[in-house]
Image (cartoon, rainbow, N blue to C red; front, side):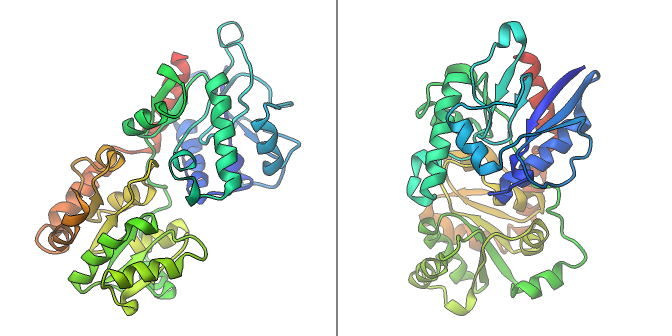
Length: 356
């Protein structure tokens, strides 16, 4: 029996809700698509976590996630064991091993390059941990997974990984579905019925706010970090969007995100950072017309599923997306979203480890 061992730290001690969603979804995909004679096991830190359906074995380590991360950054991975180890994040027991003779494998995943390209946007501890783990990946990883081809080039300029980088896209969280209680969820969150939803680094939101202001609709901004509302409000004001039409929200649950995104007049992705655009993929899955700032990541992910525009063309694009092109863009978004699934990602993970 061949066993793929999945690192699931985010399901015991989540520090990033998107990575927790991805870990949970990939686990389900791996269980459902396991080839004959293969099963899935879990490696988890100490602590109480959620149920792990379909897992044949759970190796619970003696260290909590924070201590485990510190140990693995230093290359201390006692008690983990060997075999085929896959991590849906960069946190992995990246130590010396013998793939040729013992068939041991270690493959981590990089979703986000901000720790190198925009370190000021993240807590210092996160930046230091990500950089330390990537240094270990350069030495010991058999492959490193990234979600887009554009991130291959960007990661290659940061780390000497050669031909070890593999592309396996993510998908929308399975829980991002518009439920019967969506209208009530929006009301509870103070989100208006007629709205355009935005996501992106605050510094990039100005063109999006200007475009929304011209439509007369309200703007709902997702994933604003704690304490970041005044900055976002100031950017909106400068762009001509009245405070009464601005609704700033932090991280929402999958069900609440679906309620906010589903049925929106449009979704605007303004970010050009080197990271997987979680909200854009969710918006496509919910058939929301998408207008995205033209960037290498958005070109890879959105492709022909929406409108890719320069900042100075954002206003005209949003006006078109919310009127004449709304129905067409909704269909294109849904069609493009079908290209991303966790079952497809799981199939490619199994294939990667078989190749190795």
